Length: 265
Image 1 (cartoon, one colour):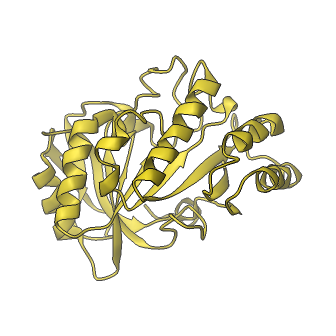
Image 2 (cartoon, rainbow, N blue to C red):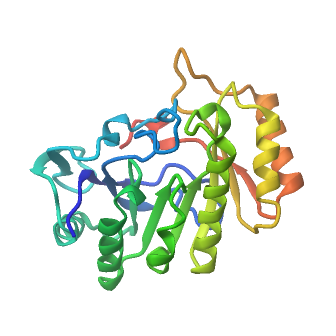
């Protein structure tokens, strides 16, 4: 099975805080898969209003960009689609002694579920640890390959992300994805990106959905802020973390996209 890649590069995981399931601060090779089901309005909303990888939303880009050397920030283009063996070849070339895991991100990796299945199986057979970042909207496909995912981050979208017409349905899908990963033994945590328009009431609804799950939750102010989308103020941010901690079983932590603050990939 071949698939479409947006980019492959080596860097350090810049978000997640110090919670179980996170690879924060650790060296990863990022395989950014092309296409996003939310951007394609599969759930009737729009693309997430704060999406920071809009170029990766296209499902079939003609080319993928591949880093020339680990961490050098220089890229060359190769033609899509790629096979899992093609991707493995680039991962092998970019591997470094401090490599922790392979981040399968997007876009939305589960939008190419068959390709993702084959790629994860190949990576595990080659001895790599795997890390999945997903919007969690496709729990139906996870049972097929969750066993090949060592670490995972599921993004719990807030209502103001405008990711779905029926926000509560999306939330239920995301929670089910977390459950599927837990069943498979994956170390998983939940991430909530918040903005100045995020409502405390919605954070409480998310917390209530997670009440019986022993899963860490990180709250991540939107980054970088712009004229239309701003971060919540400090007082509101603390209300969010307190509400989650009061209602959920897992640790609650604050996260920022450190790689963007320091100008890394």
